[in-house]
Image (cartoon, rainbow, N blue to C red; front, top):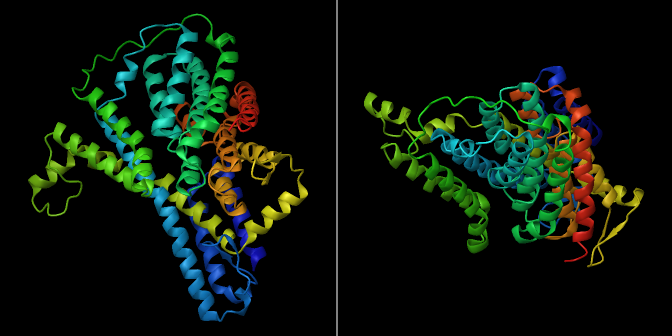
Length: 465
């Protein structure tokens, strides 16, 4: 039965990887393999010799001796545990996405566009790389990429030039997302899972992430596409929204406050994100003179419904990327199925035994740098979310162990090496119709250099703290 579940996971994983080839959205195989995996576990619960105790993070010694009802009860508790942990991540992402959409509702990102008053290609490259690095740490790398490419389309007229900028934005956004607990979904997973803390994440990964962005940008600044000047798009003449700047700074400030809320209250991050969303929503409703509500409960008449249809909160909620949320649900719960059977735990042990282990923690815990580097390269080929989800089940190192920080860096930045390797790359590919092989030829080598430079910097940084 275990073999069948692994086969279901591999087939689903392959379908996710080949999303653009088979023309099936990746959320579909993710949800299907999640449901089938847990159904097979339920049907064959008596055939499994072991079970992974999520509370103790170890295999249960007496699972085979339990009765059928006890095993089913254990499975239901485990399923509920994983659903709760997954829901924490999804609710957190929903809040962050909604705040960003509210900012966009007020045209808040036009403040950034107005800062571009020069036509030097090299200056524009450094500006957008820097913005991608900073914004991705605040509003996540996917959203930062969408925002910056949207601005780029309003500034740069020539698409052949724009795609070069888009390529460097992908590298910078993924680098910026790695050192922030809210910058990349994989880093958020590690943070919410109490594997990394905000302070140590910054301490270990900021310098490697900066090098991962700066080195490719510096090399690219000498390439032909970034020499000379370019023709800028004329201003569209649309009046700037009255509250665009206040909403930009309010929204970004609210998102940035979430890690501080967690440190002070010791509550899960999604609670702080919901508070941040509530505060931003209040100001959004005030600015639009709408009612102070986020639901249509009690809206019985046509006037009330009409009033809500113009609510910035309702408008923003309707524009959230729900397929991504469902994909995360499917993939995280599918990986949880493998973890519950102890498959990932056993795989980690065999991996540590068979691969040359070359790193040693100050506390004596042996870590394989090679394994984590391979995880980074692997995240360029397949989605980094299941890779990190798998690593959470494979390793049992404590909070702020260097392994988790290296995983955060590798999974976050390694995806830049292929355009399909990260959410930022996929969205840029769709927005600018970037060809896979063009990116492989023109941008991948820059991303690889940045990845290696940052990894080398991390290996030095970890010896200092």
